Length: 100
Image (tube, rainbow, N blue to C red; front, side):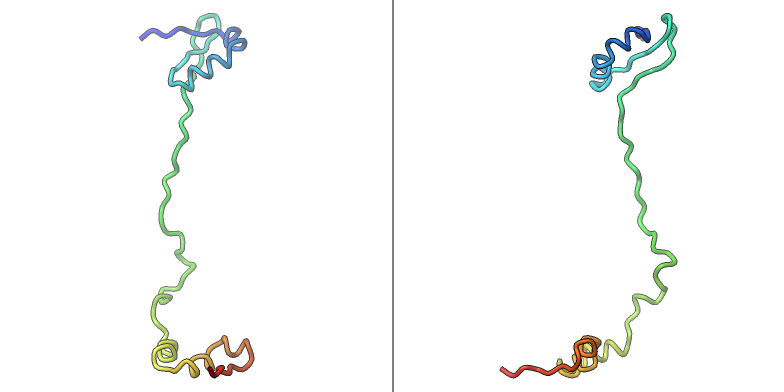
């Protein structure tokens, strides 16, 4: 396929027109004295392949294991016992349950 070489001077004066042609999918050849020097092709944004992970070294190996003391507190305590033993009660002072 023989493509027309667009000389630099012509490209300078008609740049907008040529950019529109390239954006529409055409490839153009730029040159000096009809000698090809560069090719204009449509810009295609590259998609970066993302990989999962990145937490290695940030999270300990046992982070997903249950804490027996916490399980006992959550599953085998009344709400009053739970709140009295929890950090929420410590930070708020003392917990008193409102009677209805």
